[in-house]
Image 1 (cartoon, helix red, strand yellow):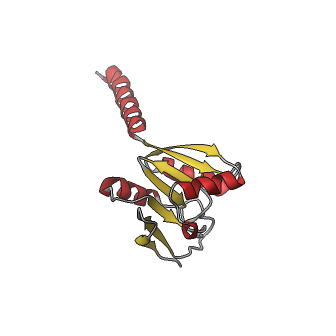
Image 2 (cartoon, one colour; image 1 turned 45 degrees about the horizontal axis):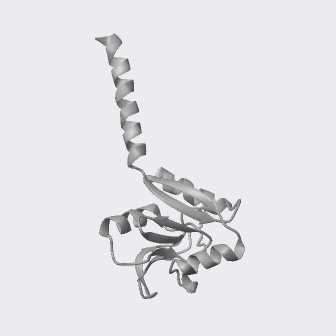
Image 3 (tube, rainbow, N blue to C red; image 1 turned 90 degrees about the vertical axis):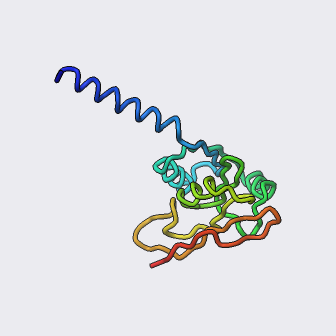
Length: 151
């Protein structure tokens, strides 16, 4: 029995890991080439159940993409993602994206404008700026979806 236990345990772990990978939510990230904070945000997503893919866009094309997808100019940040019919702008924490996908409000998506220190992908050191995650409504209006304290 002992000789079978290890192979069975390995097979179980492999099946569990394969299932978890299959259940990861795909999210497409549009960013500028070589942006370290965009890559760090994508790592944050991957660590939290998402399967991010990146596509580089250049200058004006990325800005036009954001605006065409319904991101108000005052909500713009460095990268834009698309997930299950929603737009995610900037350094939005994965748990807020998961909440959005669970609650499914009628909205364009979520945004964290600018690039606040301490947000996912911008967590360089101990300093944390207070910031809000905004829900972008279909009419372009926004409301606070979640708030994060600073230190």
